[in-house]
Picture 1 (cartoon, one colour):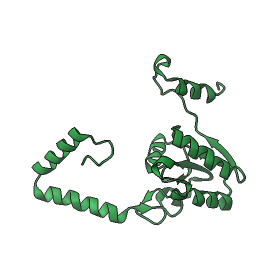
Picture 2 (picture 1 turned 45 degrees about the horizontal axis):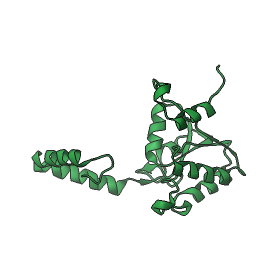
Picture 3 (picture 1 turned 120 degrees about the vertical axis):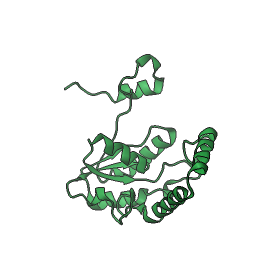
Picture 4 (picture 1 turned 120 degrees about the horizontal axis):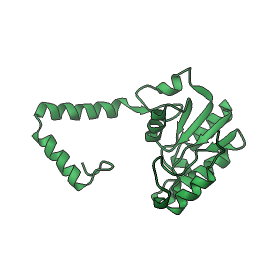
Length: 185
């Protein structure tokens, strides 16, 4: 259980003990559900988001804007952006970020598929929505340079969370907030 992301030793122990207390039929149903999910869920052939179909629901949706592609590191980012209900375009999931220390280079990600897709579809804009870590910045710069010959490339703004206090923000976050400022409407 501790191998699951975000699960520490105490939580893993609590989960294991809970499962052991449950009736065998419940535990078998859970195990079977996990096996079925692993078998049935794959990646969309267009955007590489998780999907139980060859092409995901977002890519199949004719009401989505084909002129805008939002590039994210993984499917969790798609889910987070979809919860806002603000983005109406399509996505492209890279499958991670460039991280030489972890042995992840551009060839391990879906970057070439993205370049092919953008060169063929010629969207009006590609939005890079990759977290601003060192690896995320490297990935953003690399992907941005590859896509600039084909379309307008933008990135999401970064800065302070709603309800955050300036005095508690770190210098990098404050700098990004200043960089991402925009005129009042």
